[in-house]
Image (cartoon, rainbow, N blue to C red):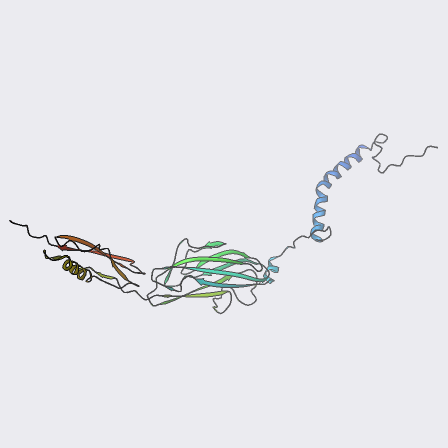
Length: 297
C-alpha cells in the first residue's frame, strides 16, 4: 500500500492543493501587517530588555534624573599681565574642568567686566554660544557648554585697561548655571571662596614721566680755526643735547664728524628711545663753520 506524503506545511504541495480564496486573502493581509508590526515589537523588546539580544541600549535620562546627578565643576582664571599700563590690552584665560562623576550639560560661564576695563569687541574665544552684549552689567557669557567627565573647556577674551594709574582692578569669573548639581559650590552665587569661580587682579602702572628731548641750538663758529679747534667746538656742541623721561631712555645721534675748518655745516639728528610710549622722539640741529674771507691780492 502506498504511504501518504507528509508535507511540512499545507502550502508545500501547491500542485495538489489550492487554498480557498478567503484563506489566501487573509494570509496576504497578515503578511502586510507583519511587515510593520514585527519590527515594532522587536524594537520594544530591545528597550524593555536591553541585553536580551546581546545589545546594549543607552537608557533614557529624564529631566528629573538629570537634576539629581552631580558634576563637580571648578574654574581657574589667569591674565597675561598683572601689572599693565593704562590703555594696554590684556588677555584673560578661563579653564573650566569637570571632576564628575557625571558629564556637565548646558553649562554657562559669566565674566562681568569691571570698572577700569573695557571689553574688546570680537575678542571672545572658546566653545559654546557667545553673549557679550552688555559686558559691564550682564557680562561676557559662554552658554550651552558640555563638559565630559575629566574634561575641560578653555575660554578667553581681551580687555583694555582704562583705570587710573596706581589703581588695582579685580575681575571675577564663575560658572553661572549648570543642569547637574555641583557637590561643593553653587553656580551663579558670586561667592569668590568657591572653586567654581576665580579672580585676577590687574594693577595699573603709575604714569610714566613725559619724554623731554632738548636739541643743541643751531650754531655758527668762526672761520680760520684749526681743525682740532673746530672738532672740539663740535663735540662740546653735541654734548648740550639732553633727553629725559619715559622708560629706560637712551639718547643717540647720527653725526659723522665736524664740518671742515675751511667752512661748511653738519646737520645732526638726535634720537631719544624709550621702552614705553612714546617709544621714539627726535629733533635736529645744525653746526656751521663760517666760510673763510675771500682772499684779496
